[in-house]
Each structure stands twice: as C-alpha cells, then as structure tokens.
Amino acid sequence: MSKIYNLFGGLFMLVLFACSGGKGKMMQASDLNFQKPDKLSVFYFLSPECPLCENYTKDIKDFYREFSADSVEFYGVFPGKDFPEERIMRYFKEYDLPIIPVLDVDFEMTQYFKAEITPECVLVSSTGEILYQGKFDNWLLALGRRKRTVDQFYLKDAIKATLANKEILVKKTAPIGCFIEFKNSH
Image 1 (cartoon, rainbow, N blue to C red):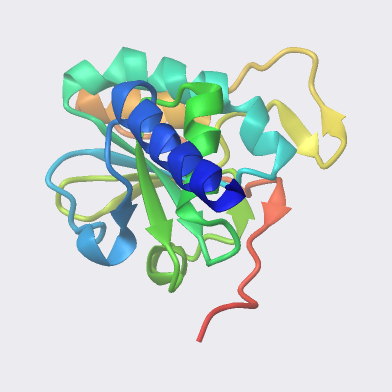
Image 2 (tube, helix red, strand yellow; image 1 turned 180 degrees about the vertical axis):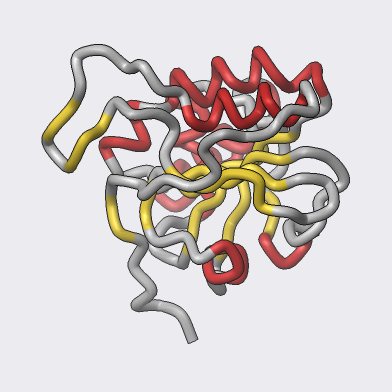
C-alpha cells in the first residue's frame, strides 16, 4: 500500500511541478548547450539543503520577473547525485521557482564553470562568454556575517549592463555559501 501511495505521491508532485513553479521539465546538463546558450543566460548553482540558497529564492524570482521578458534565460543547476529529481522538484514547488531546473549529475557544468559554492551565479552571453560569476550581492560578508543593508547588486548590475550594451564593472566575486561536494563524481 505504501508503494502505491509513494507512486501516486510522486506522480502528484510531477503534475504540481508542471502546473506551477518551475518552467517545466527537469533538464540534464548533458542536454543543455551551456557553453554557448541561445541567449543571455543565468546559471544558479543551487542545493536544496543550503540555507543560503533558500535565502536567495526571492531574488531568483525577482530577477526572473524583471529580466525574462528581455530574453534572459534562467536555470537552477543542481550538481551531483545527492538529490534525486523528486527532491529538487519539491524544492522548486516549495519556493515557487519559475526557472528551468537542471541536473548536473556528472558535474559537467560545475567543472566547466569551475563552480565550487552554492549559491553561485554565472551570467553567460549567447556567444558563450562568461560575463559575471560569483555571488548575487554583498549581503554576505562571510559565513555567519551579514550586512544590514545591501548596497552592491553584482548579478543584477551585470545583467542590466549587458542588456544596455554597457561595460560590466564587477565581473567576478568570491561566492560565499555551501561547498559543492564532488564525492560522487567519476
């Protein structure tokens, strides 16, 4: 009986995910042309168990609302095999994330972008140039140390500058958060 309940529960989660939150089907990193995307793209390296990733879910939704109409594509990348697809979909549903979920089970994207931390953002042009990489903003000074007022919005400023054909002033910052564990790579 519990197997039937789990089966229906899993199917129910799939239907919920397809109908709200998330932009649809889970993608595999190997199916995504992340080295040279079709349009300006933001790749968020995330973990459903990193508290800092949870803290930035509102920003992810805000960026999507503000820039998706400007042909900016947004992806949530989940490195490794630690979290099954169902767990990631639950995370997307819980935080109502409108971005495209990507499983990076073989660390293809993670290694290509040299991502080591969640949350970490990578802004990539349609020609494949990494325009910005690092943290969202300057809210975090170090683990456990936060600013009262955010006054530098690195990712947002980089997206705005790119869309306005202006120079990006800050192209790289050191992300602060949870380490990406490569223990289950080949």
